[in-house]
Image 1 (cartoon, rainbow, N blue to C red):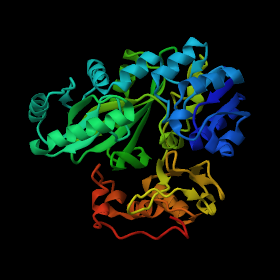
Image 2: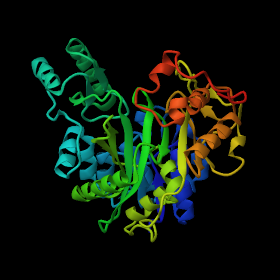
Image 3: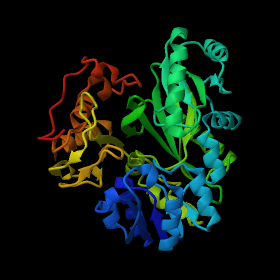
Image 4: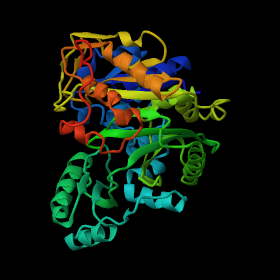
Length: 461
């Protein structure tokens, strides 16, 4: 088993990895920027190493700094969490070159899934249904128009090497294509250093559903079921749940088995998420793999009882999946709300110092809160605006929704704006309660139509 893990991240995910290491009696080393010297993750680890100034590119995104911190601290492994360098083949290769274990997929797998076009081709060969698209990135305007015409409008322009909604534009017609293409190119180059794009058919009323997998070094591949991630703003997830109200048990078993086979076919190891769009006819279309731990992994943990981070560490340490993981039977329903430091209507960022932070809704069964903040904590403008992940579990979806509403209405966060009021609107919306959602669900909220606002969290939001 691993003995000392350097956590190459910050915030709540760093605390999450540290907690899993503690249960396994594994020592931890935190890294921090100068802005995070007093952050909870730096104080919770057995040791902390400052790796640079506040800008992420000079600290959390600096591969050389991460490797040097691992060397100086005597860490035998690096866990990248999610975001930052979590899917960096360069970091994985640098770890391997120095005899350090990278807690994640092998570099070749990271490179494969970091190239969305290559990933689509590999998954098609492995037998997964892939969303129709222009498989070869095209640069000439005439070729772009021809490719879009063959797919049929609307289409979506995507960054070949990106993710997170950046370098992505929906194109309703041919007249909009050239401008959207050039804008996406600029954004992709700025975000990922790679301006290459590709096209996919755009499914206007789709559901976004992803399957969690674990694969150990012996080749045992296991699907832990699906998560519904359809509630999104600008391709950024806001609320996730498991299981999906739209997936029946035969589909879950059949697609899960196909995904497990596809993961083995490309030499996948560790945790990963295979993402799909489900169209109005119920057909699933593969879009990408997130070759890392997901932000929303707690909803799967709540319904399966499987500690995904501990399994990551076990796999990285050369062990097989824990006894009983494969026999785990999902139970109940779980929902996660991502509480961000943003205005709930304009989504304007709201960095600042938190004057008060209490989550009394965590009193009672079925609620989990993952956060690294507290009263006096600071949401800085340098990093992601996530304040907390609130996860509610119930015997069924109705109870999970009720528990989530209880948790959010009893939350007090003063000093910054948060998205809690928006989440309460979503949770009380009749279509959401009935499970009738698509990726366009939030559009009517933005336009002022739809359900009336729910109650505000006490002095929160």
